[in-house]
Length: 297
Image (cartoon, rainbow, N blue to C red; front, side):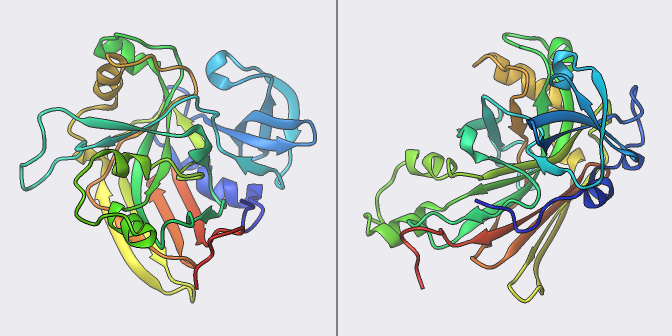
């Protein structure tokens, strides 16, 4: 799905700029992936533009000496083999969460970033969206303790987790509305571009004390939904999350983990979702009807 606008560096600097990353052993190093004439390239972002790397930053990528100017188009900042999401990761005032986190997978085709349009599948009439902190893995990790897992986290990004609802799917397809099953809900998280993240990856910053916000604007630009919450509500630290998941599967460099939220919101065709985390940037994604087949009036 094409982007609604080319994402140029003037916007990227507003969204990803190093000035927004206050604490860091690397002074808040910011890494992106951009489109060039030679294909997709990783780069370090500075106020002067994008410094191209010879490979991914978590693979020891070095600057090539080439500086891309302000009109570079941003791509998803990693190429994840695995995209994972969490449920029950935030403190619930009602106190009815399970004692351990729950996780699910999204397809690799779910990767997207700022400016990408997200098409509603033809078997759904709407989607649900969430504002989430995203962890980006920088080292291979399996059966790791908390210290090793913390060292395996390369950086953090903004994420918008997107999925369909089972009730909506059943209504559109004529499926039995009384059927009790768990697989359908997991399957409706697998849509294309259902996991925008970025716009860049912030390495060496503190994940705590950051506001997560989500705004939904209708087709006229009017704000319909506003949500705000803090990353401090995570029940487990990112290092603990990675350690728990490493007991189930091997995490590879470039894999990403959406860490969950406290609330999801319905979004309709023609609306725009804007997700932000203090100091980490902003994602803006338009929700559209599918371009081919299954369009509904």
